[in-house]
Image (cartoon, rainbow, N blue to C red):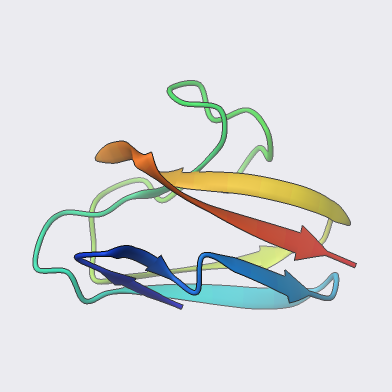
Length: 83
């Protein structure tokens, strides 16, 4: 997945449990992927990039619908559905 000046692309995806998602920062500004809700990030413990970076990967083992956001701009959001 890409993070661009327009936000996460694609904004929503469907994957299977055990799949790994990688976000790549193509925006030119700081980006930190974090699980909802801002600022606690408790929706999916462990799904948080610890510092701004060029890319971040996370393996989703828990089925469900998981919201996330850019911690640097929490209004930029995305959604991952894990089957």
